[in-house]
Amino acid sequence: MKVLGIDEIVYGADDFDACRGFFSDWGLTIKRDAADGIDFETLNGCRVLVRKIADASLPLAIEDGPTLREVVWGVDNQASLHAIRDAIGNEPTFVSQQDGTRIGCTDPNGLAVRFQVSRKHDVQVKCGAMNTWNDKPRLNEPSPIYERATPIEVGHVVFFVKDVKATERFYIEKFGFVPSDNYPGRGAFLRCAAEGGHHDLFLLQLPQPKSGLNHVAFTVRDIHEVFGGGMHVSRKGWDTQLGPGRHPISSAYFWYFKNPAGGLIEYYADEDQLDAHWEPRAFEPGPTVFAEWAIEGGIDGNTRRQKNAGGPEGKFLTEKR
Image (tube, rainbow, N blue to C red):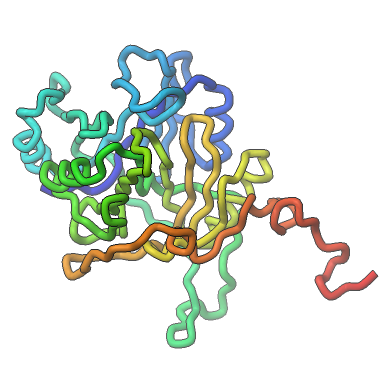
């Protein structure tokens, strides 16, 4: 079996107006806007659905309030879908659509997990190349500057779990996920297949274990789109949780915002790419492990400075008054 990544996520939320405004500012396209729900899409067709918390058709929530209710993973073909059916068909929570095109179950943390043959499509986007001392691929061309972000896909999800070992084992044994790195007894970074980005799923067990959503992360083109997207969202009045910054473990650049649909939401780019030769590492949790560097409160989209730091007084930084 081969799981390709996230095809769709479903939120249960209580403020459609805030969610409509936020995800539009985030850079998603509205595909359907109705009283019972709003459907958004990324560039490659990954879907983000917002439904009412009390919608009886939604799976049970893993926590109170607005949160993620369902994660739908895409597989490469029908044979992989059948292999997953064989792996989870005896689970007491197994479910299948009448036509069998979507199947799933509930993971040990209580989350509804579904699978379908992927409906996403390939996209070609122009990205900013990085010149280094050894390699200088960007010749006679400036790096891009983005006024806002248009996310390519939902790249990963992160959950608080009550039992990290049991939940990690479930995804490995049932769906073929592969360990990337870990916090022993506290956290597990997993990718869908041996070859791919650093993680598609991160499971985190707190000292006082609980179930809940930590964040959903959206892949953008490059570090410049992390900055441009983050400053646009900041200009629109949405609150930064942390960022921009850079993760040492995955090498990715990030910017986290508070999400009215539940949990946090992240722009990220330039994560490590791994294959079957990668040896998982163990880390002790700590501030310097989480972030190589990070800006508290974000950057103001107008002044281009850290929020509340004030802008330059002249047209040039060296200008004196």
